[in-house]
Image (tube, rainbow, N blue to C red):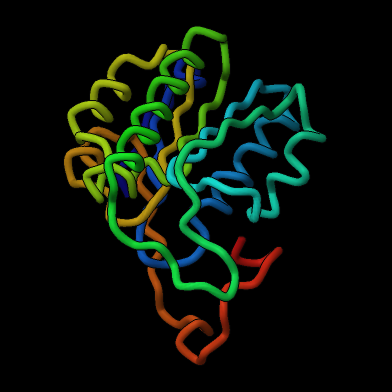
Length: 186
């Protein structure tokens, strides 16, 4: 095993990506948010491409202010009992760029942890140019821990990250006909 020399001065400032086809990317980001807030860190979450009010965590997150704050961008894609809205429209792209603007402004507000939920997906679907995401990653303050979640993360973003975790789908009850359930999947 290779001996690793730790740098105790590099406390914050790493870039994480949680990607892959498996379940748990947003959940991992939210778990990290709770851990950080519980340790006295200031946390911001920006939801990309997740418009609407159906996501269960949005009911509890307001109660965690001032420790965790969140912003929502994106149009509604998911309504229970109706088909998922696939495809990318001009309005989707505009909302994604609005999200990038929010993240940039948060970098000036002394947050310790900024989570960009589904930003990797937005880049993978070309809602946002990869170059703009890379610029965001390069311009974040050194003291900010940055997390990007979402499937189909472009390789250039993966290469620029410090930590990449791939959630691998091995088995899922969706393929047995179990629909997404409130409080579990959203």
